[in-house]
Image 1 (spheres, helix red, strand yellow):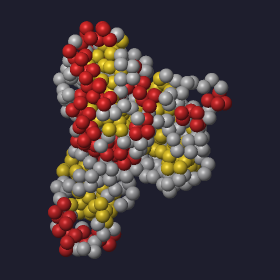
Image 2: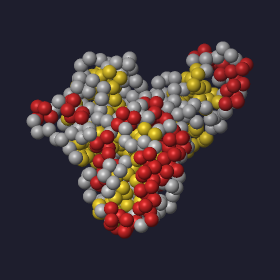
Image 3: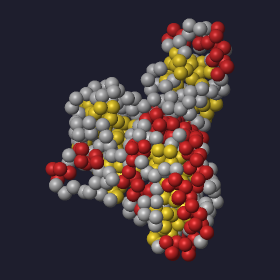
Image 4: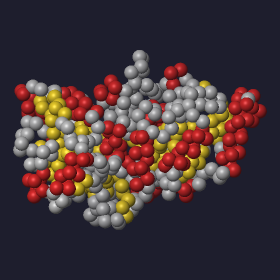
Length: 540
C-alpha cells in the first residue's frame, strides 16, 4: 500500500520526498451526465471535508455541488470549468480535480490531466463508454496516467456488469480488475462484495443522499438471506473472474495497461468510501517529472511548478485572477521569489492560497502533488513553469485546434473599454482563442473555440465580470491551420479563406470552411506553408 501515516517530527515532515509520499493528486473524468461532479462531492463528504453534499443541479431545495461554483454552471447544471478540492483523508493529502465533462470544454480537462498522477474514469451503468470518455482516456494513455474505473448509477436500471467489463477491455484495451462486485443487476442492488475479503456490504442511503450512506457488513448467511438468487449469481460471476485471472495487478495498474474497477452510485453515496480508500492505497504518489529536454526533476529537488490553469473572478468581491500551479518538486513557501521560465524574470508569491472549489485559504507551504493558487498572477499563462534553483522548463500544454469561429462585438459602444479588457482577460486565461486582423479591426476580434458552448461562457463572463454584453456573428469556418507570413499573403486572397493572428502567441492561422477547401488550396499551391495546429484532440 502507498498510504503513509502522518509524520510527527517537523524536520522530517518538511522533507519534500516524505511529504510527496502522502499526496494523492487525481482527476475525475467522464462523459457529460455520468455523475462526475456528484462523485467529486461524495468523495469530499466521505473524507468529512463537507458536512452535506449538494447533489443535483436545479432541484428544489438543493445546493449546487461545491466544485461547480460559476453562475452558468449552477444555472445549466453542467461543469464548464475545472475546480480543485483539497482535503485530508487517512493521513494523506488529497488533491481532487473536478473536470468539465462536456466535450466543448475538453481543452480545460486536457490541461488538468497535465497536473495529475492518476484519474478516475466514471462510467454510467446504462451507457458504458461514451465518446467524450474515450477521448479523455486517450489523453490519459498518451500521458501514461493510471486509471481507476468507477461504474456509477448501479442503483438504476443499466447493463450487465460483465458486459461493461468486456466493453472496457475491447474498446480501450485496459484489462479490468474488479475490486468490488455488485450483488443484483443494475437497478436492483442488494450490496457490494469486496473481492479481497468476500464480504458483502449492504447500504442504507440517507434522505436525499445528503450524508454518507450507512454500511452494514453481512455474514455469508445474512447475504444469502438478503439477496437470494442474486447472491448465488454474484458468486458464479466472481468465480468466472477468478478463472480468467482478473485479480488486481499493481504493476499493470502502474503501467496504465489495466484498471481497477469498482461499482456503486455517487448520488446515494454507495461504494464511494471504497473508491476513496482505493485511491489512497493504490494511486501513485508524485514522482519525478520530465522537463522539456526529457530530464527528470526529482521531487526532492529545488522547487518547480507547472501552471495548468488561470481563472478570474472566483472572488466576486475583488474580481481577482488566480493561477493554478501544480507543485512538481521541492517545497513551496509563501513569499518565495521564483523564476518565470517564459520570461526569465523573478516572480513573487506573496499571495498564495489553497483551494476548495471557490473557497480559498492562505497557504504557507506546499509540496509535490499540491495545487497552489497564486492570486493576481497577471503575467502567467497555462503551460508556464515557475522554478527555484537550477533552471527547468516543463513541456508546454498544447492548444486544441478550434472548430467554431465567431466575430464578437460589444453590444453597447459605451462599454468598449470594458470589452477590450474582458477580451484580453479571456485570452490570457486561455478560455478561448482570440484572433485579430487588420481587415476586421480591433473592435471585432474573432473568437475561436473547440465547441459552441464556449461562446456562451465567454459571453456570460464578459457581461457578469466586465459589464460588457456582446453579440456574436458566427463564421462559416470549421478548421484552422498554422501558416507563415509569406504564405499568408497568398492564402488571404483565396476565396473562402481568411488569415488572422492569434493574440496569445502571434501565430498566423488560416481559416477554412471545410477540409475539401483546404485540400483544393493545397493542390493548386503545393509550396504554401500549411500545417496542423498542435492539438490534444483529433485535428480535422
